[in-house]
Image (cartoon, rainbow, N blue to C red; front, side):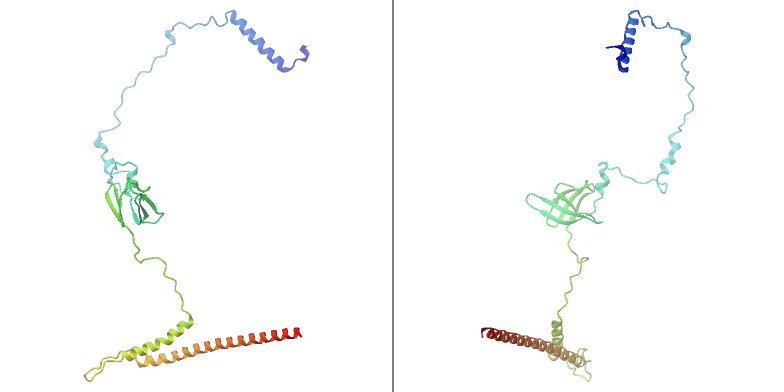
Length: 270
């Protein structure tokens, strides 16, 4: 290969190889072998800093800081607040917060479980015997009866009675309107019933000179209800008569149609 055809990479490799050969040759002649440590020179040593004199104590006696406990800084009224250290640690506060209602009880030979509902509302919680709610791990379900459940917690045992419907809340039943004919019939029968009752039940007659006042459901009210009953009966009779006429007209049309078809078939045969 001629030197004129060599590329830049070839010249770079050649320069690196020549530099390595030069370093190797200098190392053979003792390059770096004459380097040695200097002799100890006391004048070059730096003196250590001397310790300063101890100052006065910054903290005073413990009695001087009595106001720190008597007037706490992080309270609203700057007065000491009572507190209790729960041995259960972080779960102590959650364990004491047990406010549930017993809504369902499930008892089988292999499973004892209850369903709790938070008193403030929320999703129901299922708890098996020996377990505890997630929001109150300190309360463990001990026993399950037909209508109650017993939980044991930091405050002792607590019995929850099964909640029953007390008639408060819910939606009222749907009001079903009676048919008009039934209403008319009932209105027509009501005065008769009142009249019968008035006929059967009579107020006792006084033996003295005065008689007791007449009842509110007396002949006056009976006379007022009589026209209404007559009007209702007349309307019912008119409605029945109208239906009867429509049936007769329908039958007449059917007979006419049948006669027309029979005549048409007779004409076709001729």
